Length: 329
Image (cartoon, rainbow, N blue to C red; front, side, top):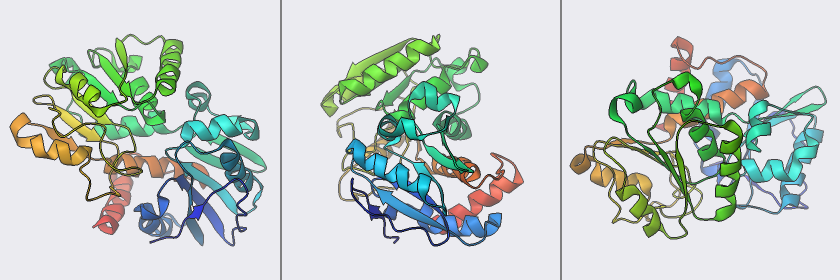
């Protein structure tokens, strides 16, 4: 298991000794990327490189994020980072430090990718791309148009904003959810999502619900029609114990349950994927974890940080996926 740096406002990061990419998260040392990355780096011909975790607390102090980004920007051999969990908070605290933000980062107010081009620091929001690629990997063709199902998104952070925006894009024409229902434990994230959706002027009806207690999320899920897709975009199960639902929650018949997480840090505490699997047979439920999301998320950011091309499908992508799967086993 890799040893991550625990970031604080005054933590002195050691200068990188080789070209280094960072993973900014909460429990980064437990991620499969620490064993997958060296194999990918060898396959991609990146030379002597390293992956290093940086752990921050959920909704950490802005000075902590400032310290992290300042180090990456100023350290010569630090090439960039993938950011998870902290995507919105980090950009809010460090926006003035970036020389370029892509349109998604500007619109969504988040960065999942930090990279450098010369002395310029770039920020990208890759989730609208990577979450869409992950969803399309398992969603049946024309699922929304054929079934009339709704999308229930639990959580209102960066990943939730990304996937809701992706599902409503004009290019999907009639193949969009009949309705999107979003719930979150706190009000500020919901308000931020509303503002972004309003800017996009998207055609699909959206409901926003404040659900400080998991029983409230249960009640919303009980109203979903058959064939709906339930998405856990929270970090619960990975970055914190438990599930956003209770064990009494009933998943929609013939639906799909998608946990954005693929790894679970609290095996003794039931999480969303456990709950979905327990109902898979009775509800005829398709259950998906976040493994494909993990692969797309990482390969898009690695391509940005190292300024290389990595395909999103086809034989070469299949090889990359196989390498990761072998390490995961």
